[in-house]
Image (cartoon, rainbow, N blue to C red; front, side, top):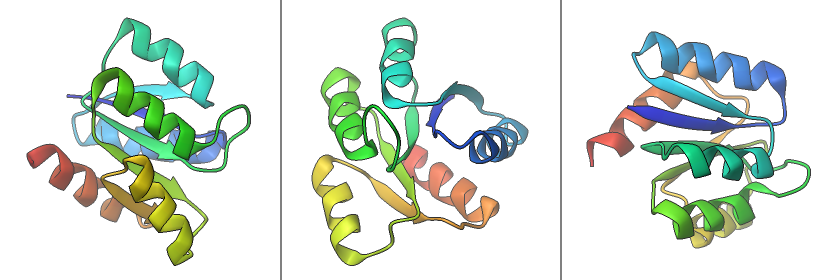
Length: 117
């Protein structure tokens, strides 16, 4: 299964890549929303893990775009943990929401749970 990971922080991108790769997933990486949409033209992933605060296009907008393109599940990954931020994420079409800093294993549990549905 393929997972698209979109985050402008190279350290988070690498951490998530390592966790998901070790769990047997193929990881497509993008540093921002525009790069993610370009990747989607070539390859449709089974799930996307998307940071909320990114340059060029925020994660809420990207989530709406991804859902319009392929209706894939989206897990938002963000430092914004307020209830209003979570509501905005779910209204944009997210399937789950993980607040940074996060436990890498918890992210993996949530990805597995979403993909089981």
